[in-house]
Image 1 (cartoon, rainbow, N blue to C red):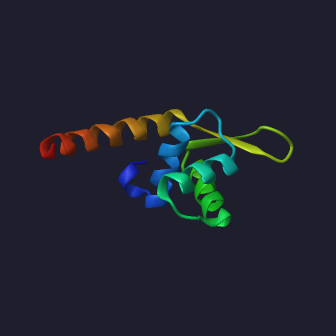
Image 2 (cartoon, rainbow, N blue to C red):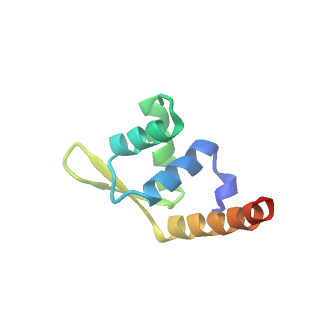
Amino acid sequence: MKVHELTAIQRDLLFVVSGMRNPSGKAIKSELEDSQGRALLAGRVYTNLNELVEKDLIAKGSKTGRTNEYSLTEDGRDAVRRRRRWERRYTKQSA
C-alpha cells in the first residue's frame, strides 16, 4: 500500500498515530482536531481508522473492554518513512 493511494484524512490519521504511543481513537481524534483547527465527526475518524486497519497499516488492540488503542504496523511505519523521504525530496528544492 502506497501512502499516495490513501485519502487525505487517512494520511493524516497515519501520521498522527505514528507520533503517539498507542493512542485511543478519542486521543487521535482530539490531536487531529487540534492540529487542523476544526471539528471532525467521530464516525469519519473511526471509519477511516478501521479502513487503515483493514489495509494493515494500523493495528487495533484493546486498552480496556470499551477503549481501543492503535499503533502502526511494520507496513504502516514503512509507508510513513517512504512518504517522508518523498516529501523531503521535494521540499528541499523549494527551501
